[in-house]
Length: 105
Image 1 (cartoon, one colour):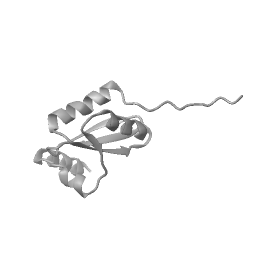
Image 2 (cartoon, rainbow, N blue to C red):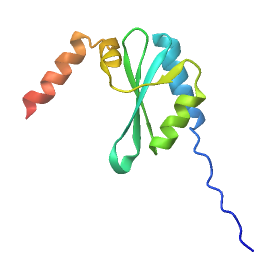
Image 3 (cartoon, rainbow, N blue to C red):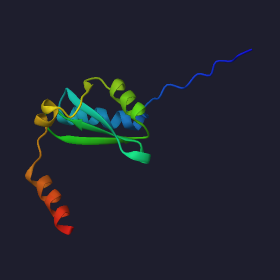
């Protein structure tokens, strides 16, 4: 007799879902979400709010990142296309922090 092995469906934790929901509430909907692998650490779900703010949630895998997007209303899967990039707003404070890191060398 052959037993079928089922793979559990990846799910996001309550904390990850709560973080994405809080971001959506704070920065407006719809929220665009881009899932990017980050090596052994898993994946990063980059969130772009309706106001252009950036946020992220780190998850153990790309599959869990996709499950996170599916679990939160008003969060839609996106790619780094021109629409998503154009929707981001990077303020002067963030630019200064980025510039300082380049100067440290």
